[in-house]
Image 1 (cartoon, rainbow, N blue to C red):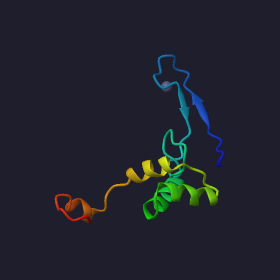
Image 2 (cartoon, rainbow, N blue to C red):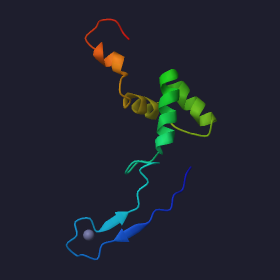
Image 3 (tube, rainbow, N blue to C red):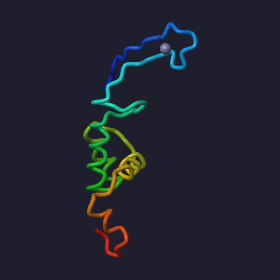
Image 4 (cartoon, helix red, strand yellow):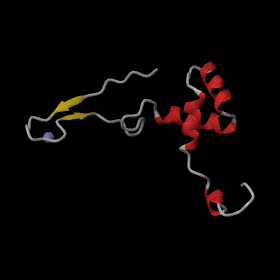
Length: 94
Ligand SMILES: [Zn+2]
């Protein structure tokens, strides 16, 4: 688990649509994310080389508890390699 202290600022302008501004860490974590980019990449790497259930088991043993469902969801967010996209109409898998 990673604990991050986030700075927040309140806009004094009454008509401000945002009102509250929170500090961001774009090099570490995306907006509203509950995992760091590095953890997501790790889940995806283990997920593509194994399967959801085995990846969840391995990652839990390594101190990154997660579920098979999460692994699968994260792997499905990966884009296909360029050579697979150009062969999308081909009948053979790449
Ligand atoms: Zn404002």
